[in-house]
Image (tube, rainbow, N blue to C red; front, top):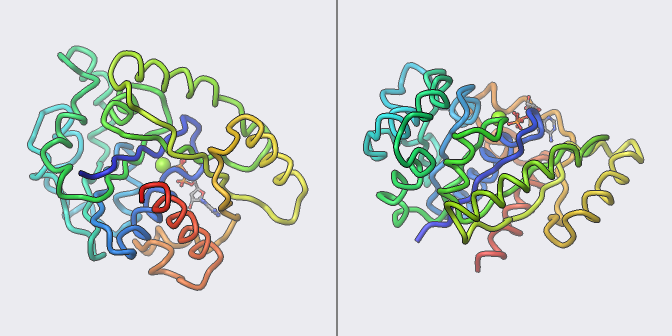
Length: 254
Ligand code: ADP
Ligand code: MG
């Protein structure tokens, strides 16, 4: 049975999508069957792994809001072992449309049951909010991986995130766990980053991965080529560190 991991933090620009795409791609390279589910209306994970808008027939909106069988929205990526449920701007209306629906928190959970057995890992890229789409992702997940940007105010908002996780545990998904906390965009030239890593470790203890993702320009270039970092520049620091993260994740699931 596949492990479902939500990549979440309601702050924008902390590396959720970068982590979703590159963890997904690295897991696929290690021979795991991976489904990447994009739940952000921006569709950055979708385009970042090379799915063209013009090729999308059904998206995650159809699955969550219209209860389309998820198989009809799954697309093959260029990468072996890596499938995608794409998102388009259509998803922007989903939060409001879901509000009036029955079992609105469990739509994605229900959809994934159909295909969960066919994948080793299902990675859900969450939007930058704690709304119904994120609640759907948490309800559908075994665990949550939290990317935290290595900057001042890194801890800001994390207690709100923890509250939301506790609410979902209480009402919808008692087995939901913290997969791990990933420090991202570390600037090695300043001391600040290291201080922030130490702060976050005080808060999350051994949940913080040993791997820290550095600020690496190759990571920001890769999406515009529709490639993960291991296909765009396998020798880059970014690629090495996302591979190292992937090994930590695999070890935790042995
Ligand atoms: P989120 O999904 O949390 O909004 P993204 O993964 O989209 O964050 O990252 C925000 C921006 O920062 C993107 O332009 C991305 O390419 C860039 N980025 C992410 N991680 C790194 C990194 N480690 N080094 C350099 N740029 C990064
Ligand atoms: Mg994103």
